[in-house]
Image 1 (spheres, rainbow, N blue to C red):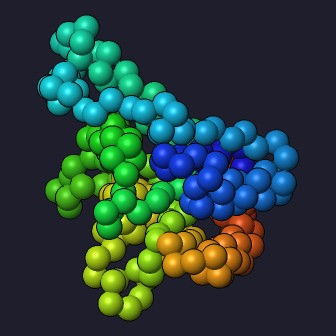
Image 2: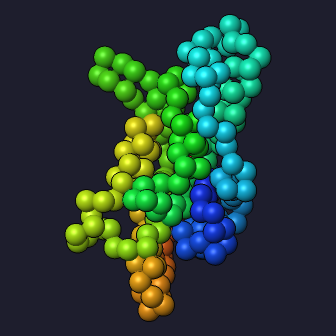
Image 3: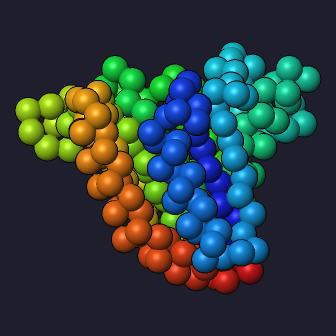
Amino acid sequence: MKNILLVTSSPRGEESYSQRVARELVDDLVARNPGARVIVRDLTKQPLPHVSAAFAVGRALPPEKRSAEERQALAVSDALIDELFAADAIVIAVPMHNFGIPSSLKAWIDHIVRAGRTFSYSEKGPQGLVTGKKGVLVLARGGIYSDGPMKAADFQEPYLRFVLGFIGITDVEVVRVEGVALGEEAVTRALRSARERVNAIVPWIAAGAAHGARAAA
């Protein structure tokens, strides 16, 4: 494994449960791969612009026909997509906001899901181009959404799984930090469960990402 991309999106920063667990996971991966480089994309400290008209128009034009404004808008997208392709493992730390994802993460997704770069169209439909990667979603929720009466209100995990799969990242594991708004004991249980999950999947991520890195070399 050469590169790990860590994407964080909680306005709570280091106090965020999703970020804390994601960083522990990344630290474990680096311990197994001492030469690995970690690229951190903090979407709250470095918020991305929402896609603009220049982006929408420019992405459909050949580079030589884009205006200066369109080239600038696409340069942001290109940099983010290059980060994605350079990574062997992508770890995304996500708090649940109003049953879905933070707008900061949605802006990142809008920049990286791009025809001709991360997916293409064919006679068989869309095809993801970001292949050979391992993906991990670290999802924090105030309540319990993986099962029970609130499962239908989970627009966080299904959406992220679909988006990653759409661009070709189909090997995805999920670490849930659930029930953190239900009291101190619930937080303790949630963190213990999340850490057990991290311990279980880190060997899989490290082995799979190393294989992907060798294949791409």
